Length: 197
Length: 181
Ligand SMILES: [Zn+2]
Image (cartoon, rainbow over all chains, first blue to last red; front, side):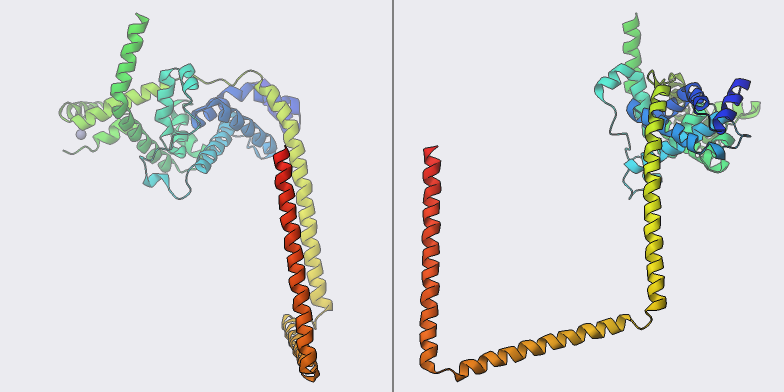
């Protein structure tokens, strides 16, 4: 965190709205990207990112300055997105018992959106969307944000061993999905290569 | 075939020493489930890490500022509502406490007894009234009763007949009106 950022943060904590807006500008992309990867579409990601900043703004006095500010923001965003995903699901089932139950977001994939995002992006969504929300958050924080298992455990309020086992399960699930998906993916790559030639 | 610890080595991404690497290599050559797990996970990892960072649409911070004002108003509204709910709860509690202190003789059972008593009173009154009516009828001569019966039934039949006619005429009028249109 730069000196200027630290100053904005201090001003924001003392109630300066302008300073907080600066922080929103600065951190909008990582927060938005996390919400997008968690929820799978722009509309929900925008709402979730705005809600994240609102929650941060209201709880700014409770922010522990020893922690990194972005880590704190991402943790708020991850918790919010996990809750959103859970609300969408049937409350009767615990996902851990039904790992193959398709929880893909019904809002996506919209064919047009999918086309715009490109097939690779759509395939990635399809892949990540099948993980249960907490596993998905762990994978996203690990591979998109380079967070360590300790950091993830703090951000998701889990123990380190729980994070490890979640990541292990998620990797296995992703590998299984890719292996069933592979013929289609290979075909897609082949077509991309021929079209670029 | 035993797949541990190879599965964990593949999936847990723990750094392996030279000897472990060679062991894994050797196992992958002979075990197709582990080797396909390895290649599938590598493929998944590649797909995840090749994705670009998604940016919000332009004006995110501006939308934040506009939203902040709206959220603040909504929050104030909610807080005011909470204050009213709180006041209502406290008033109810105070009223209840006062009732307990100042009205010690009123008990739930007493209210129940009072209700039963008034019900019994009502039943008695109705019985007395019915008895009175029967005794009046008994004292009237049979001829008067027959005449009264005939008069009343004629009146009733006439009323029903007139009512039927007026309904019939009204329905006829409605149909004629409809046909004119
Ligand atoms: Zn094996």
